Length: 84
Image (cartoon, rainbow, N blue to C red; front, side):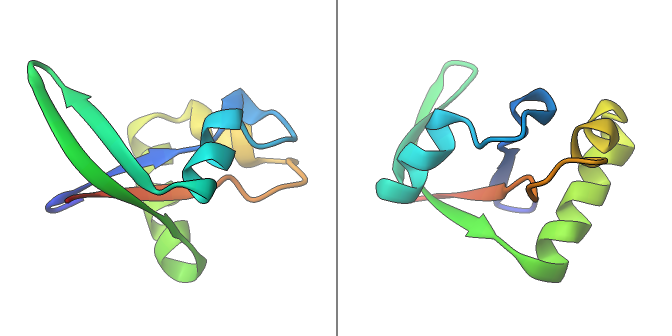
């Protein structure tokens, strides 16, 4: 998404957040591996309309994500990773 990377804490539609998401909430400093490149980044949870738009784009690219959210009691978090 522009200069940032976006990941989704879907846990394949699990009703609970994956542990890695809880770790990001506790410490947003991360290291991302992109091919042979290692990138320090900061994780920010995206909410509201921006989250919804990002999730819709993800569903368009990977339709199974639509099923992950459908009927799920939690909103699947979108996390923006911005290079530090």
